[in-house]
Image (cartoon, rainbow, N blue to C red):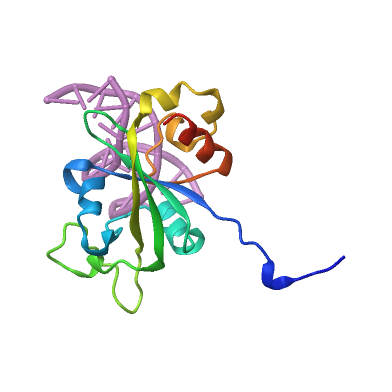
Length: 163
DNA sequence: GCCAACGTTGGC
DNA sequence: GCCAACGTTGGC
């Protein structure tokens, strides 16, 4: 068997990230310079750990609008910078300031995301909840409040097939 | 605006 | 380490 490590494939990861469109929606990302923004303000350890440890360059992410009239998946982004300290935690004037985080020992992490595209329609939470194929998706599980969650390749492709 | 379902904090 | 109190998330 011939081995060629230079062709070793790194599997792409898929994610879903929530944001309130009144605060930062997909159009806000679209209008950013280079259509890129840092995903700051996450103050949940599980979500932080995923950004710190698991999100890799090139990973694809569903942009989810939460706490709004029509909650659902509205677009796709890409990870363009892997986990690094969330500097909004250092700023006393920032809404997400955390006195327990500093440059020496940053407690919170973030990634940079880049706009890829807007879906032709919103795939609503209501609709996602009705799909047997998505029963394992954290988003539709009872009481889920995670703002960042993994999506399997199968779930990713299935969701896009609904578009 | 209500409130269930969380996660975090801090007294003990 | 327990757990009550509190704050937040986010659908509805």
